[in-house]
Length: 358
Image (tube, rainbow, N blue to C red; front, side, top):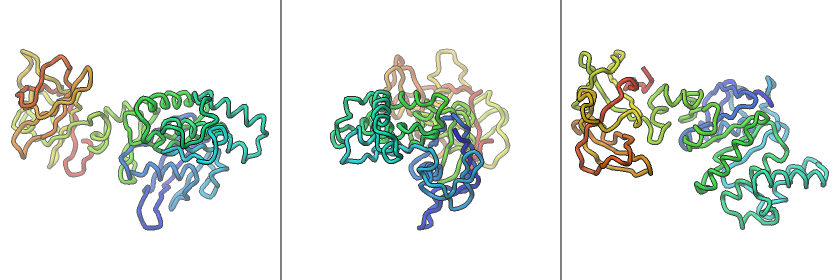
C-alpha cells in the first residue's frame, strides 16, 4: 500500500474553472479517508488526481515518494468506483467483474475463481448472468465495486459511489465497504453525505470551493470545527450559528441575556455556535438565565427524537431557524412558546467577518 501525497497539487480545467486549488494532503497506508463537501467543492477533482485521470496543473502527486504525475491510471495500482456504476452495458455481470483481469492477461481459470470470489463477497452471485440494464442502482454499484476490487488494488477510490442508491441498499453496500477496510487497502471515499463519511472514515477531508477547510478525525472535526462552514456542514442538522454580543459577564443572543458562558475573545462581529444536541427544553427549576425565550416554527419527527425549529429575538437580531433536538415524548407544536436551555460549556465562538473559529 503506498503512502499518497499531494504537494501543492491543483486541478484547473481548460475553461479556467478551478476544480481544486493548491492542496497539501497525505494519506497513510491502510487509511480510509473520506473527502466531504457540497457539490462543486473539489471532491471529484481530488479523486481524479490520485487516480491519474487528470494531471495536476501545479504541484505533484506522489506514491511512496515517487512522483506519479505522468503515470497512467492502469499503472498506479488503483481501483475506481464512480456514481451510477459506469458498467459495460453489453456485458454480463460476470464479464464486467472479470474485465480488468482479462485485459491484464490473467489466465481463464483464475479469472473465474476471482470473479466468483468477488461476487460472493458482495452477495451478487445470482446476478452473474444478468446485464446492467436489468440491475437496480444498488446492484450496479455492487458490480462496479467488485470490478474495482477483483485485481486486489492497493488503493480503492470511490467518487460519489452511492449517489442515487436507496437507503436500504446504501446501508448494505456501506457495510461491504467497511469490510474492505481491513488494513490491506488504502481507501479514499468522496461523498457529499457527511453522515456516511462520519461513520466510515478514519479521517475526514472537508472541502469547499476547491479549498481544504479541515482535516482530522471525524469526532475531532465535529467537536472542534475551524470555521463556520465546517460547523454548519457537519451534523444533521448542522451547528446553529447566531450573532451575539457581550455585555459584561453575560452573552446577549437575540433579546436574551445568557449567564455563565465563557467570555468571548474580542471581535467586531461575534457569532455563537451551538449544536442542536446542546440545547434542550428547559425543565422546571432550570436556571432561567441560561435560557432562550423562543416560539416553535417547525417540528420534524425522527422516531425517538424530533428536531424543533424555533425563532427568538426580534426579526433582525436572532435566528429564524435555530434547531434543537427534542425527545419524542415531550409534547410540542408549532406556535408554542418554549424556554430552550443552553449548555453554555459547549458554546463555540466565531469571527463574524472571516468565519474562523476564535
